[in-house]
Length: 224
Image 1 (cartoon, rainbow, N blue to C red):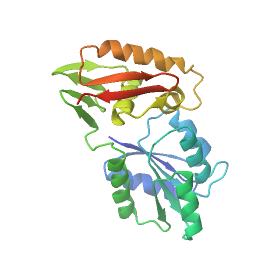
Image 2: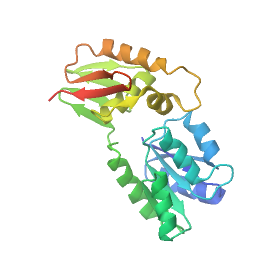
Image 3: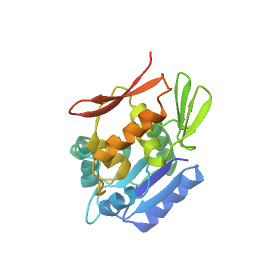
């Protein structure tokens, strides 16, 4: 089940959005500003963010910029009271994926959420198929030649992220920020340890390969 983070300082609106999302099959949690959102993202895996712009402490612009500067590609749907072209330009320059103008039509919001999740390559069944290998996100398992392998959470999330974007190079810091959280004090060499463990577990798999890009990080190459 997809988990969506609603970042909204208006408690009534936050509860409304969360209720509608839950009725449509999503898990929903809320934070009252960008700072709280970042704290929650250190503890919870989030598939998509719905965020207001004007909030105390850290607004929607700043939250988006922090996430994008960290290399996080999580879809962001911005809610705004502003309709001027310049305001829309600022939002997209910050790194949002889509926006809605208040008052929000919650039925349209659900449609946009679904479209953003599909666009982000996070499919409804949350499975990635690569020839004879299947990554099942909900079960946190990898099936290779009909043999199922269970992986620890961090290892699976790391592998799933890399396989979701074949041939894309991720730096160790990007992977640390996305999988372990931006506030984690864990050394980024932890990524190397997890990659080595994955390589050992997947040594019989010829469908995909984790490649070290010297001086940069890692990428996954799928078999042709």
